[in-house]
Length: 164
Length: 216
Image 1 (cartoon, chains in turn yellow, red):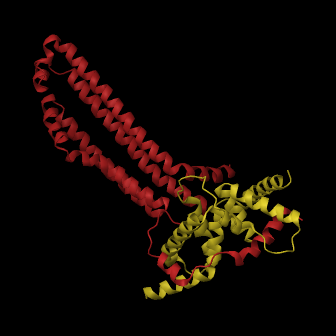
Image 2 (image 1 turned 45 degrees about the horizontal axis):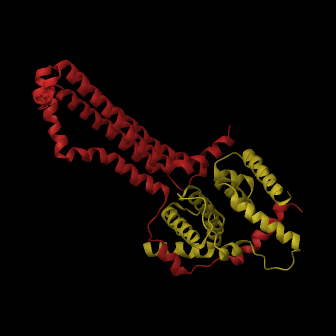
């Protein structure tokens, strides 16, 4: 019975691990920290799994647990050493279809994204993941109107960073 | 084109560039120890509840009871201890109840609110424990001040040292020493405690306030 549950959980997580990796890439600056956060999120997901009743999709349920873990995890310092290989992996664009300015803009935006506060990151992340405002407000525990207001402020902030 | 839309498009293309862990790698993570703040708060809080009570295991603290008896404050001290334990159990019960209510499945705001509330229970307990600690010192100081001077000198074995001082001045001196010691100890323990509290809760408090500010 327990073995079944383990198997089901790991398979689901394996198939949806991208969500967790994306959260980790946003909230950490190097591979070690990325792996630590991934592990912590996995533990939290597993602990909460018995309460997952399949009312929502597994992936939807994951967003909340993953973001909550990232936001509340105790980290020693905000300043972490950026290792070059990891940094590349986050923003490097391998496709040719962008012109040079766009590539430059994207790089600036990814950099700006990493500098946002924990809450702002969560908001932008859900937005980038194409979540609607009702889901965003529900996940963060704020009203839909306030989620929009905050998102607009972040947009402005990003825009001034990209077009100084 | 909106910059953010550009970012979104690019972001969604990145799916394929993320690392990929195998079934076995994920499976092995299930048995690893969590390092979440909730767990740390639980461990540190339990230490903070237990630590002051371990002091009573020290012989010197137990011998203090004889001293209280001769000073005539034994009943008061026993009263304070009983009161202390009743309140401690109330705090532990409250703490455990709030700790159990923490769930990673709530919205970020509610989760943070519950974590902070749990920790606040411990903060109130520490404020209570420190006040009681200070009060005990003040009670002893006033008991000394209003005690019989000659008797006090023999209780404290100060016959030699007390030759040059009148009993009244000696009493005042010892009282003042007790008051100063009480204030210093309280301040020191308080400082250590609030440093730990501050460090643990600082980032969480900042994130929580950011969400709360939005709702005003």
